[in-house]
Image 1: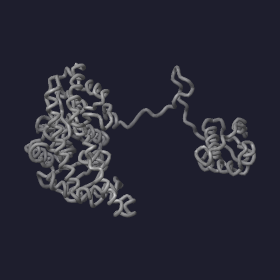
Image 2: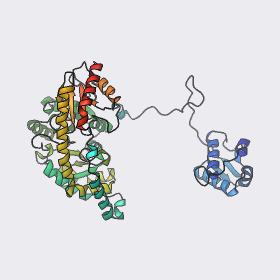
Image 3: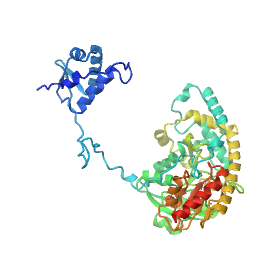
Image 4: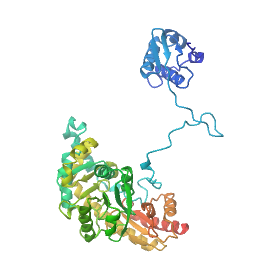
Length: 494
């Protein structure tokens, strides 16, 4: 039996004067009929008026009605046949029961279960804007040579041609891979050529690739504790069994028994400047870690996130270059040396893996950011990158010294300073009676964004209480006032 169309759908006039935009007569009629079908005001099998009759009833052209009927039929809402046009039968989601005390417009039910692998991933504490004082990991954005970078981008755009609008090499632009390999060999002592370099969308994609390429679900991964939260997230997302490994003044602590009791497939480490404590892994530990990884068939991920900025003595070389054919995947990023929104990082594969992983990488990656990659290659090869690093080393050296002085003079609570003479942050350890999470939350309300040291630990110990202070993007002239305020907040939280 054919059902009738509610008269209200025919009587209500359409709004005039909207032209051909989203409020056009055609769009209004389409939306009216579509919502009537989805809301069950037009029942399945209902016969719609002919196009001429509906056009006359609404005072619009027949072509408008015909176009709407055709579009709704293409979308599957209407079924035209020889007898006219009728409403298709649709399977509608069940309505959620309205919670007690609410009206009939309660939100529909949605699946509540996500992938099990997401459950161990901890939510990070609230973050302030990138220019908030003390936020770790943010470089001195105001000091970046924007004009020089813009010229590099312009030259890349002019010389590249239309072909660079395509996907490009999945492993990255050859020019940038060559430039990265050359820079790492000189600046970090990394043994590699361009064929081993994979350009990634930041360090996080590099870490995710390591987990996807080298592990199976259920494999064991060792991570530093406290350590970089992003590394844990990448391991959790790959369904790995994560084992937190404590760090001390010499970096990652591994006992001989650990290799037999819980042998890893992956070992994540930040040996040149442990994040967030700043410890430097000793040469003896590095060599021992490499030897044991070779013996037990494990791979080491070396995250060298900010070691370009060493403020005392000679740079500490990368672990990757210590031993030929070391089982080390070297990860780096331009978020600290350039700027975070560039979203470019890199992964240096061991020579033994580079050829074997070409085909999987070609399927996992699609390339992109081609003009930025070409501009960065010019920036490195032309010397602008090296000059920028030199300026930033001097600036960060001055800022770290100023922060140490401000802390010693104005932080009126017991504390110890970690962090080494490197990077963009210092870690201030506090007695447990000064709860770091409470202090960090209070600081956020005052425009400061230090990170609670305890938030970096999977198994927090009594020592994991303190604040991680990023000084990279905070001018030194603000340190005195900021430390005084931080001191007040710490005493208030005790």
